[in-house]
Image (tube, rainbow, N blue to C red; front, side, top):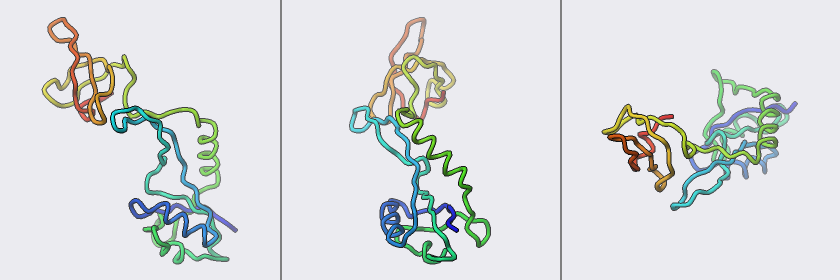
Amino acid sequence: MKRWYLLYCKRGEIKRAVAHLERQGVGCYQPMMQVEKIVRGKMQRLDEPMFPGYLFVHFDFEQGPSFTTVQSTRGVSKFVSFGNTPKEVAWDIIDDMRDYEQNHADEVESDLPQKGDKVRLATGQFAGLEAIYHEADGEKRSYLMLDLISKPVKLSVPNSDIER
């Protein structure tokens, strides 16, 4: 009986792992989601994996391929396991992820606040002060409106200094 398992793949080699696993008759599933990111100064929608580096696989180890064969496939690092036995993933979890992908395909996840959101500066010379998120300033910085001396000031800060 075919079951679902979770693999950890070598960095940057998931596509290679999928190609080699599918040739062996192993079903592969990597849940994806759309995110907004700034790439080369422009906001773009990109498909990214929900779990980077991980791949769900579907096969029957009794009929082949074996756990050892799957784990030694190019691009695969190891099974997610407890002890020496790979942990089986429940069908419900896979179904829920597939439902989520289909029902939320148009929704976009963003790692940045929306314009007008209140944020707090976590580090830097203005640590602890509240500000209003204004817009992205490149890939790693953002503009905030900070109220200094009763006057709003537009300030560019690293995204790592911002907490919601």
